[in-house]
Length: 556
Image (cartoon, rainbow, N blue to C red; front, side, top):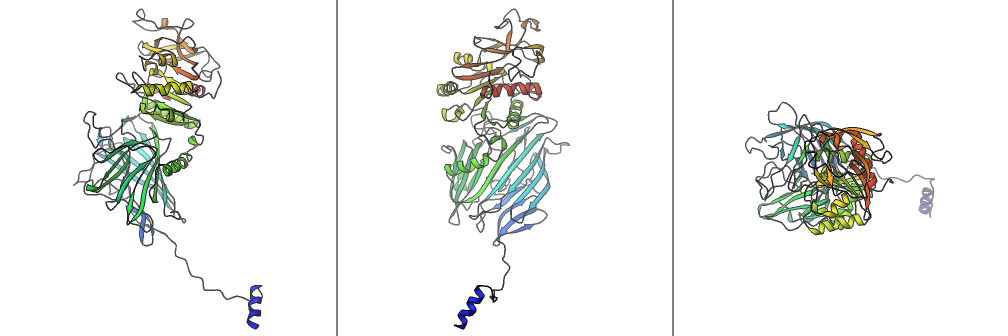
């Protein structure tokens, strides 16, 4: 009875209850840092380590592991000593090799140097790493290319997974930078191993049953190599009897999204490799002083991820960018050229369009691949932008039919400059675009008459616009065109004026127009020959107004 009363009194607070002595709880993780690296460790094992010692040739992550697990990466394997776990490297910049190294000297033709701007290790075991990088030919006095790199790492989740968000901003120096790769088989100088450059993973040799999965079909390998396009890819297998993987997500704002991938699955030589190879099919030229940004998300995770899981993670990543917040406002920029003249303004046009779209919260993809012309792919876009396309663009009739169905379903079309020289043997395309290119006099200044001062693509120009460009002369003009800009061909310096002067509407040669065609909305400008055009504010506003009109976000 007495013991019962004491317990009751203690329960209601009249007597103190003896408490067990409190012990300090050891944290699950800890930071380890030194002059050359920073690492997250747990249970006596490294979860991830970032190596930034300047005596190396690249900054890199190795090891990467799940908490308590074996490393998933391999640093400097004997077959390719310049493979560094998880790392980023260009292949060729202006013809110099920044990827492979001399095995004895451990040097490349091109040098990658860096300095640490900030390494922040946080109490919750997340982190942020900022680097400033410099790319130049060995021995060169000045930078060819600079980079600002930020890598943000999450703390490990309950299942051990963690996220690494990469943001890489590249800026050209005093000259144009050509980003290139080993050519693919079938190209001049092509190799079976061609087509890689960029963010890469070399998986540990101990992996069992390795596989690659992606948001798209990866096809069949050739000589143990996979090359495919997808928004996300996962390299996975079994380590220590447990399934694990590393997923790469390509942000929709990246150049040439969805990116190309280069994967190797070769158990015979323990060669397990994945690379986000956005220049796989075609080099890229960055004009002097211009810049672009690449964003990737890398996820280290347990289990194998299939296409459905990758798609779900990709959607989360896509929404992390402001321009992607409204996926309904999305355009596709198409820049393919067939046999014949190719404008050197295409890289500048892509950069300008990407900036224009980002500032106006329009998602943008760009491609040179006509395989993008399928019903399932095109239906996601409000408008298609043919930026300086030329000659034959499509590989087969199915791709042409997909474009026709897209237009007839109410899709928008924007043509820039030499787009009117595309598909010159296809009458439907001429009618849809509004006309067909015939020729142009030499580049020169001329006066443009603004025919519609209320249209969103011309309202900022006043009644006339002084401009220097190629003055395009066309035929097969669609009689339903609403002319926005025109010019007087008789005032041109044109030695061949008598041979052909181009068709006219209202006594003048149209230089920009819009019209509705078979249910779609089409806008075209003949201007934009030189790459400098794509940094001119009036021309950029001209393009923006045309894009918005084609997207049906303004009224005629």
